[in-house]
Length: 259
Image (cartoon, rainbow, N blue to C red; front, side, top):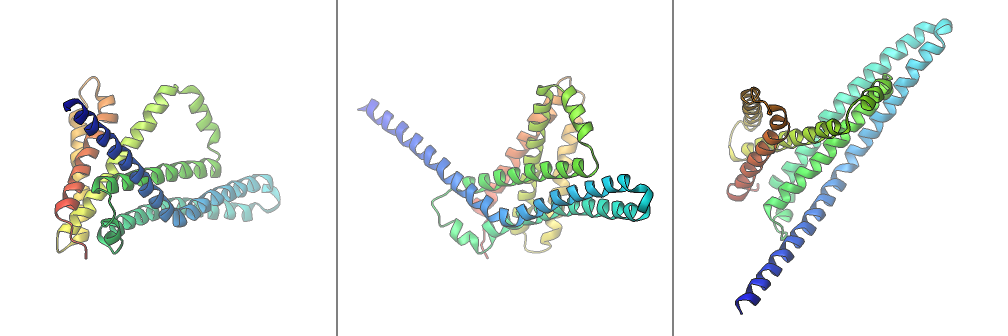
């Protein structure tokens, strides 16, 4: 009887774990579909502007003798538009994803979300993975548009061919880990502003500034160790991501007040 009970408990545990993953992927699918309607057209516009900027530069070189002044102006205008749109796409992505977080946890959509049989950790994890995916897409689009506009593909391919695959993977995963830490810090800022009654925007800015100062000081203090590169690249962002995730979970679990 004891063995049967133990097996039954293990079966329930794995069934609950499988159900939790299914719910997580459903939430992630909903988050991505809710954000793609706005973000995908913006990223497509960035890529198109990058291609047009490349054409403006090529036309300036090809027809320099006949109408050099016109193509010089076109080059400057397109370069300014491309750079401005790249900057705007990053800012808009941050605003939209932060708005999705606030709407899902503190707005009208929160009533529906918390009526679902899904834990707060699943909601937070789906938001984090969604932001990571969009952050990675935004980075790829930004670099692709920049390389296309200003003919940087040759330098990139030269660097890529001379770099070790392990070093490239280390850089990619390190970037993702630090991006995760930054996203979770923004989540903590928004959760903290929900708790305070006044000066909500000031509270968000202060939390981000203090969090970044703490992370920077920790990285500086670890800089003297022999294996500091691996620690700073992987361990530090993972630890801070876990800390920020825990703070968000506790605030949403015990201090949530849906308006």
